[in-house]
Image 1: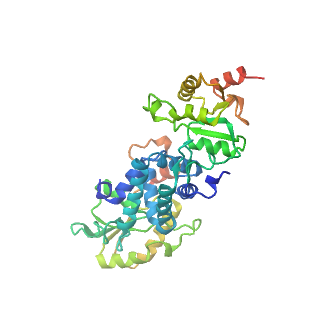
Image 2: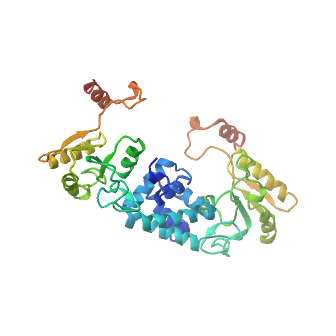
Image 3: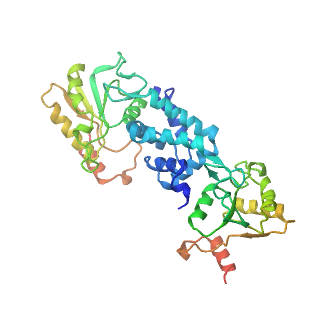
Length: 199
Length: 199
């Protein structure tokens, strides 16, 4: 190994980049060299925007969304329906639903799903405040917008248990064929779900 | 589109990340959310190391390598052989050769290869100082360690022309089968080169 890979700031940068999701040592090296080649165009703007995000983006105390304010713009929006609360695993799911312009209620971002494998227990998720919010907002329907994976579904199960004694309907997103999805590309689980939920 | 994707610092960050090599909008979103989820463990160390790299890593005035000093530790190393100069396209190529512990001469990093498609002309590469360095160092062999692509080879051709009148041998890396490479996975160009250069 040469000294770049042992001790220099460049090594440290590649080490940190390589730990980001989807990146490895090769892609980290490629990105680090690219940043140094284009300091003005890429390195400096990236540094500034990381600083901005670090300074200004916060987690909404209420729902767990990310925004420049807490409560976030969704929680603060009085036009939104407090009777519906949509539970999602991650902030990206909020964005996906917002892009679809279909849901006008409030969100609750868990921050992941329960996973024995990854060591994610109930205390690592925003589960404690869910019951509280359901009661405070006067929620009548909790929509579990969680993935159709084993871990997400066991998380859904825990939430159902937690809210069982409250006067609230608990629904989940329909499982079935994605719109535009071809039948012969679907896995068996999806086909079973789609057939059972036929109407 | 929601406001995250229009105006917030988070949007700006995802925009900058998405422009890095190998990343796109989806992976940029994933990385941005990951950084915000792990501020102490990932966001802050990344910010600090980008700042360190920006402050301390410079391009070696002599060879174009990246290091905390200029001249770089290779150019400053008096034990290295000034009679051999290895011309490479990128800094990553220097690292690859250094890892192999096979070359003990000096390097010359072009900073890319000529490419009409990408708009890389002779003035965008470190071609001007190559001739000068060959003369100053008293180089007797210039080794063109460039890829076996059309663009790299036309770059090699230009360098041969530039140095044609100097008393210096110009060699190139051998083309052939990679060590451990299976014959039936090789493209025809490699097989032709390997057969023609048989010994």
